[in-house]
Image (tube, rainbow, N blue to C red):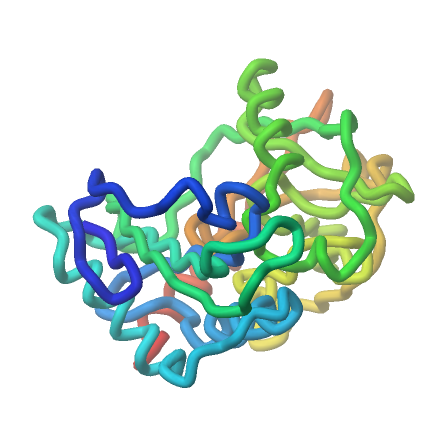
Length: 282
């Protein structure tokens, strides 16, 4: 089941007209949220990032779009599913109403919430995870790159390329040849005892899980810094991992000729699971 603008429907039901702006122009923003242990994980941060993206896209934010309303709409989708699962991957998309070409005829919006089952109650990492740089196209250092919009051509092309080459993920670089992020999440490295991640100014997504890990590192007494990382740096550090709202933390085992440890990233993953388990809300 899906939630199409407040109406629960079968996932295979027709939803849009041929004038849908998300389809025609990528005129939509979205959040990918994990639901588990009875709550949406880090819901407040997801909500405010969504509102910020809508404002930048100059969409009209309906008065009904309160945190409580959208949270309940997400929960309704989970409760409507015919199958049961320990956790769920939710995608909340907000798209502009039909009309216009590049210039919309209005600023009204609609929303769509989808749910897919996850089979682990907690964040769980794979043991083997091979990555490579993706250098065919570059991330632009701009605010638009920080947003979670449906304009994801680079990520799609990069994902297909990495699968063809036998890698689990790809590392994106910007037009200054700096490391930015993974295809599907932010990048962190452990350089000795220091946890490093690229700054938002590099063009990386302003990830919700990225934000949580920076907070968690401080709680755990880990020195976390936001600074530029070069491709050369990647072969000098002790550990590399990808973070996103569904995976949590996934350690890299191989990059080119370098094998990596996962001691510190595994400890951080354990701390993340304990934090989420003890949370009273999302």
